[in-house]
Length: 72
Image (cartoon, one colour):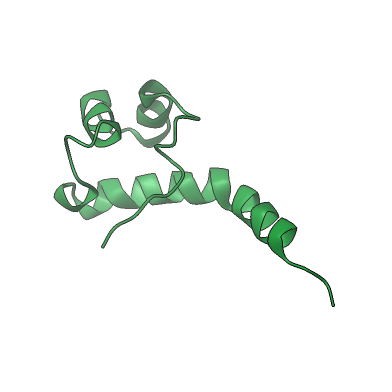
């Protein structure tokens, strides 16, 4: 199952995502509104979205994980 936890969280506009990935803004808008599922887009488009999410939000996820860890 395809999953993008952060990309459609509201931090980026549909225009920003479309511009960064080259995917049509209508597709991005439909994904954000859950009118279109990630399962229904082609693999190349999904890979672009995944690359964008990874490049923008990996350090954020790492920070959250390190904040939640306790030291012994």
